[in-house]
Image 1 (cartoon, each protein chain N blue to C red):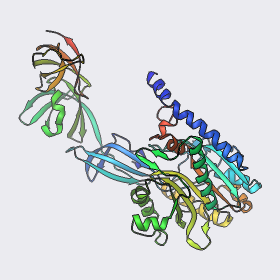
Image 2 (cartoon, rainbow over the protein chains, first blue to last red):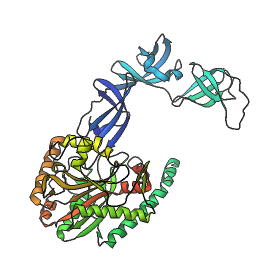
Image 3 (tube, rainbow over the protein chains, first blue to last red):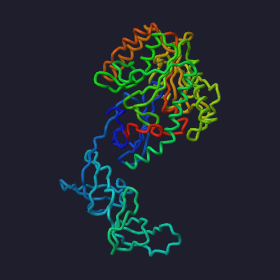
Length: 187
Length: 307
């Protein structure tokens, strides 16, 4: 592809490694070539690098596809998913899931980014409902600002919730920010 | 809708400053005997330039610059012209770019690039004074705009910041990359910079310096990394002009597979253009500077992203 077509989230193949474009900085001094400073995130190990392209250069697009997968369970260091069309199972390593493991609840559907046969990234639904397994007893608010207390959800992750939330409540969480949204039903 | 309303109202003070700047610019040029003109935005032919990509409009183009038409007027005998002109350049989008933008161009007969540089110094000083600014604060930078602004040749700037002399070692690719990566980031952060005497292979439509064939009488004005204006002693040699267009047309055909037309009517006028200087100054960027706006979308209500 022409470098002018590179945008945020474009997937490029750089030295054989699939990378996602996090940022493009466009400069074009005088009447000269356009210079594109591109921040790249290595999709295999998450490291970031910068690369400079100039107009007229070609960049190689990484052939990536999305497929829908259902998360089944964790086995050792791997997370096991199942393709919702072919029912084939897919093993994804802990390092590739990264922080998203906090909201990876058994049974949910995710969009899996594939590089050939290789799973490289998952996109969680924006909102997921979780049961609260543990929560501190609320200490009476000292101020008038909304107080948050720690609560452990099904996945083992700990998030801040309002003081009126009890063990057994179902709450909705925004997986992009990791924040409490609302209570769905109370026990 | 609510987001758009908030965004547009947030711009109000910048847009008021923008309108004031237009008013003062018209007064500035009127006081100096310049005539404001309007040349077409939709044109049958544009100057072939390798790194400026036009939008097509049926068989014509949206103007990338009013330069050729303004020079045709100079050839007819007009001496001092200025214009606010909408220009369109495909793919140019970023913090300092929008594909549709406004250029202030002016041309002055019997003047060279040094005279035009003084006009720019005078214009910016005048606008700052009218807006009540003693200095120009831009982001975390503060520019002392007292004149004359510091002048440095391209040769000296490259020797100091990139370690080579592009005027004696022709290397257009390295020239462009080092300009973006080394030279511009190294320019003064507290005074405007006038970068002078570009290598002859980056002359564009500027004339070659009579006493040094390696460089052209072309200058660019920078406020640190913000490039404000491009100044020429205009090329008025028809043969030389045709040769440069031929080269540009060939380069575009090789690199982009497109055959641009020769601007014939302009070439017919070139022998009648008087010795003159001219400049293209990005109005959106000037407004950004004077409003301390970090991005072009803070001085234009509808950019390509939200039009």
